[in-house]
Length: 195
Image: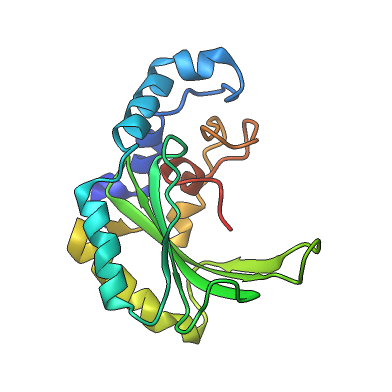
C-alpha cells in the first residue's frame, strides 16, 4: 500500500474534510472549513463522472448474468457505490445476495463487502448480514473480477479490514446519526450506510 494510503495517513486526510469534535446537526459542522471542503467534494460529484458511467457500463458487460445497481446517493456521502447481484437474480426475488463496491471521492481507495438480504414478506422486517473479507467461496470469483475492474479503471487501492475499521473518535460522518466516538474510516471515506 502506498504510504499516503496507510491508516494514519487516511485519518489525517479525513480530518481535512470533517470538523473535529462537532456533531453534524449543529450549524458549525457545515460552516467549518472542513465542512465546506466536504460539501465542495460532494457537490462536485453530484452528477456521475464519465469514468463512473463507463465503469457501470463495463460492469454490465463483464457480468451479464448479474444485476448491477448504482446505489450512489448524490449530495449525500463522498462515495460512489454499486451492488452486483449473484448470477440469476431477478428484481423482486425475496433473497438478494450482492457484492457491494464503494469508491471514495476523497481518496483513491475502495472497499468491497458482501450483503445478503431476505425479504420475509409484506409488513415483516427484512433479515440479512454483511461480510467483509474473507468472502464466502461463492462470492470470491466476483470479488476478484470486481477488484481487478476497479483497479484497472480507476487505479484505486483496496483497503484492508484493519484500515477500514480504524476508529476516528473525534469525527462524525456527514449524514449519520453518530455522536463523537463512533466513526471509523469506512464511515468517513465512503458512507456509514451499509446494507
